[in-house]
Every structure is written in C-alpha cells, then in structure tokens.
Image (tube, rainbow, N blue to C red; front, side):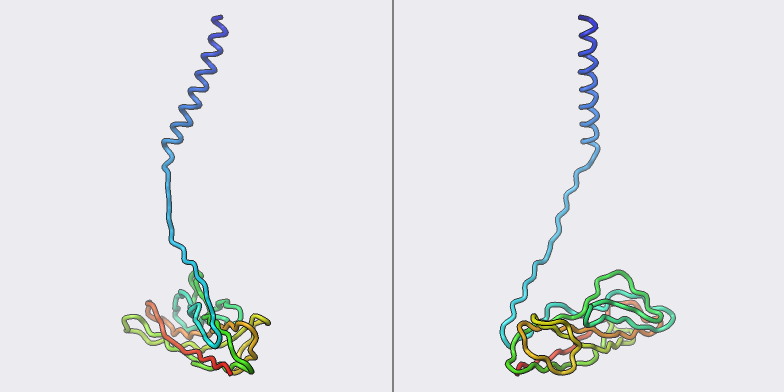
Length: 184
C-alpha cells in the first residue's frame, strides 16, 4: 500500500504542479481589448445627378533637392513618382464621382488643373494637371475627351500629375476643382 500510495501522491503532485504552472502563466499574461470605429458607406445615384465618392489624394511624399512629379493614373489609380520626389506609404487615390442619366449622350467638362496651397501659407503653391476617365456599368474604363454614351451608371475618375519643386516646405496642401457632367 505504501508504494501504491506514493504513486498516487506523485500523480497528484504532478497534476497540482501542472495546474499551478498553468494558473501562473494565465495570471502573468495580461488581457487586452481594443475597439475601433469603422465607417460603412453607400452611394445612391438618382437620374441626372452626380455625386463625389472619393477625393483625389496624391499622398505623402518627400521633396528632394531636385524637383519632381507625383502622378495618380486616372484609369488604374496607381501612383508613380519621378525626379526628386520620394513617395511615403500608401493612402493615395484617384477622385471618383458617380452619376446616371442622359438619353443621347453625356458631355463632360471641368477644370484641367488644380492649385494646391499649403495650410497656413508660407510656401509656393503646387499645381497638378488633371486627367479624366469614365466607365459605365456596361463597359470598361476609357479616357475622356468630351462625350460619353449613356449606359447604366457612369463612374468618373480624376487623376493627374502634381509638380513638386525642389525643397518644397513640409505641410498639408489642398485645392479644389470642378467636374461638370451634362446629361443630354
């Protein structure tokens, strides 16, 4: 009986040691909780209307000792840089508008460039040339001249090329431009 009791004591001791180790690990590991807010969006388009769903954003960049450019492709939304401009991170996008309407055709016009000024001033303004593209729910994306045949919902994309001078002061730069869509 003594030998058998020793085995049971050792088994119980092992179980107790395992339980104590598990409890100490559980007590040492802190618990974390995190909350975040997420935005849900929807776009409802009425006939013969135009709504903006996204702004044009050239993103964050570093201005070097030589000037350069940042381009957002109107068709693909991809960003490229040239010269002394170095891109930093992601977060770039082409502007996107949606509309529907027109019986015969749609004419598209608006600004061909935009001037971006630094919040608080004190820096040379930046200029971006703009490029327009469009797609319809019935076809692919095309670069826009001036007209588009109506077909379902039209999505308009605005990209462009931002010229950044050498050693441009740091800051947030912004400007506005106009897109006009006439439904005929």
